[in-house]
Length: 276
Image (cartoon, rainbow, N blue to C red; front, top):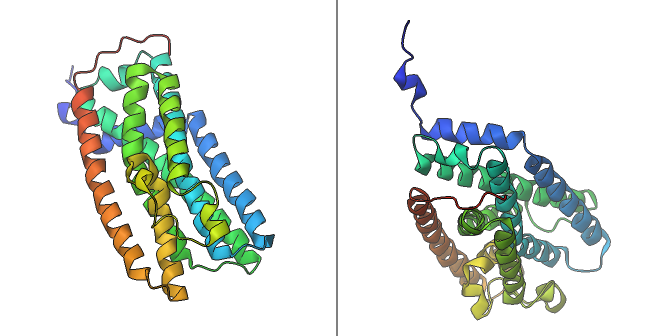
């Protein structure tokens, strides 16, 4: 009998990610992401298409809302995903594989990609509704930049949420995400503070804006606030761009560090939870 080709059975990054995406595609998380993205974009787009608020500042408020919700959403999604892995075989898809590092990295990337799709849907639907009403004050590129900023800012949050869900379970991951969302809202002065005052609250966040849980809201916001400042001739336009640059660089570095720490920790992980 011919032996199987060992090369064809080797675990590679692409195969690990493809396997993770295939499992994700069959899970309820796909519907959750699609529903949240479309519903959020429609609800806020409908509101700002008829409200008296400046539509550019409305887009800024929407980006802050999406970004501030990401810690909570990451906690929920990571908790559900890890629960599903436990239910399917006590994390066998992550631990009983040739490379735990590739398995957990693929899980992290797949969940972040799903979040990115939901964000793109939300901002895309939001922009489409405003454009149909003739109230889209920013270009699609600005909305795309906000989406990329929110996703970049969310990467460390996903790494933390996945680690908490693996070690302590779904409830701890969700609780930590909820706390992160509250801090993110406070970092920009509360929901719609900039919308009501006209301030660029993403760029001028207070001390809480230095916390990584606030970075998705701030990175999504400054992508739009840089355009607002430039188009209106604000003196702080260059300062907003500088804020976006250093915050993006810091977040990229933290994302790499957080992913590396998650992978290093998971290679020695022993699951003591069997209750899902």
